[in-house]
Amino acid sequence: MKVSIKRKISNDLKAFISRIVLFFLYRGFKACYKFDKSAKEEIDSWNEGFTFIIETGVKNVNLCIKKENKKIVKIKETKNADIIIKFKSIDAAFLMFTGRLGVASAYAEHRFTLKGEINKAMTLVRVIDLVEVYLFPKIITKHILKEVSKKGTNILRTYIYVLTNI
Amino acid sequence: MIPKYYEYQNSTKILSGEFALENIPHELKSLGAKKTLILTDKTLEKIGTLQILKDAIIDNLEIGGIYTEIPTDSSIEVINEIIEEYKKLDCDSLIALGGGSVIDTAKGVRMVLSQSRNSIMDLAGCELINYGKHIPFVAIPTTSGTGSEVTLVAVILNKLENIKMEFISYFLLPDVAVLDTRMTITMPPKITASTGMDALCHAIESYTCLQKNPMSDAYATAAIELIRDNLEETVKNGKNKKARLAMANASLMAGSAFSNSMVGIIHAIGHAVGGISRVPHGDAMAILMPHCMRYNKDKLEEDYSKLLLYIAGEEVYSNTPKEQRADKTIEYIEEMLNKLNKLSGLKTKLSEAGVKEEDFDKIAKTAINDGALIVNPKKANIEDVKNILKEAF
Image (tube, rainbow over all chains, first blue to last red; front, side, top):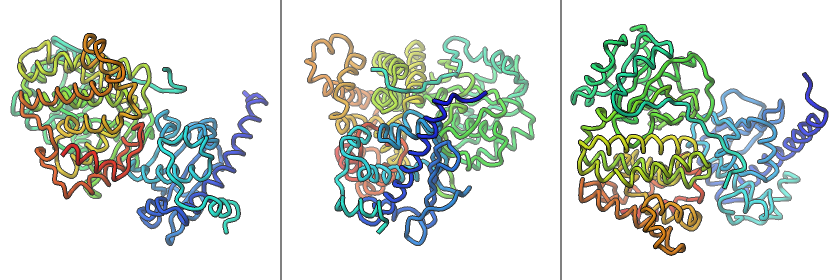
């Protein structure tokens, strides 16, 4: 049985946009680690080699990040991640990546499965929240975050870093 | 208000009331069981609770073995030991008789057996396990507080890393939960009070956390009414079977509610206080509840206002101006705590419960990494938690 064309286009589009958002999420992690004091404190608390994966449920649309030599690096998939967040559908992932659902609400709605120790996931969740403060405008973050943290650095500098990696 | 999306599952069959224990053989046999392993602890063996269970089932069900060495904190080592025993005795089902620790241990044992794994370590997390092999499982709570007989959570201690690992899956739900007053009637007043306040805390947090939904609200509010009407009586007169059964039902309903809508900041701080200062879970819940509710109040004014109807009754609710109802709800809980303190000696302050001020930092750092905090509607950082601890001290 084949999926309808309308649904296929929708899935492909969601996967495409999710891939872009994941890329900026990665850059956002790097930028926050570099410029935001709170994010740096959180990431510094991670053990060297700490790895997490965000999977969207679509093949090759995922993000695998490792803390390596005190840097945030993107790696190819690993089976030994500390935390794996796996969305139950691309639709659920898309809700989060387009700023319509925060991590806490996504967790509350059982939108993803979580592999690993929940206490380690909590610090990751706080960093994702911080990254979202930079990536999304306040009109969105005030709906998806419990509290919009003050930006700890110049927003322009962060955007330049996210876009150019410089 | 109906959430945009929610999930709710309570597939556990409930046997509540007279001769409920005697129906266990029928339930297990109908689930395909022939030979069962009973898990419990030394205290329940010593005070005769285990014997009551054995007498109730032995004529109609083969008891393959009884494991009584379960400690207060269930651990991976204990689970592995029980699995060996289970296999050696050729058992095919489990009965857990006890409080949260015994039932959580049984969940861990069942999880490993059903998933055909050697260790539960790689199953830590949320919704990772599949249905697997079915191991018939009956849970008999001996306290009225944890609600573990109907929850999808198991907390297991990893002694090597000294951390409590959380396992969350709908497949952890027991097949049958048995509420029989013979199992709770010997509970001392102080434990009755402490576990009862734990049940109240489950109901209140499930009514206010991010996953709240119409089903969990219904269970939570029904539980609160039962606790309001019966907790004090069970503390005063533990032999009152009617009140005991009501409290057992309240605990189960609150358990089902929080199993589906989770608990928040009271539990996050309470877990840390329990782990670091060894304060019994129910005591920590009772002490922290009003202070955490005050912290959350600006976000939860409406929900707390509604709760006044269930915690205080119609008359108080209708006589209280709308803008004062949330505060009144918190006051009622404080009054309840003070009454229970007079009746049973239940602690009302963290300082009385053995918490040291110098541990606040450590408690706060642990609390903010507790999974319960993610579904609390209000964000909390280390300073916020420390302020709550100071107020509850």
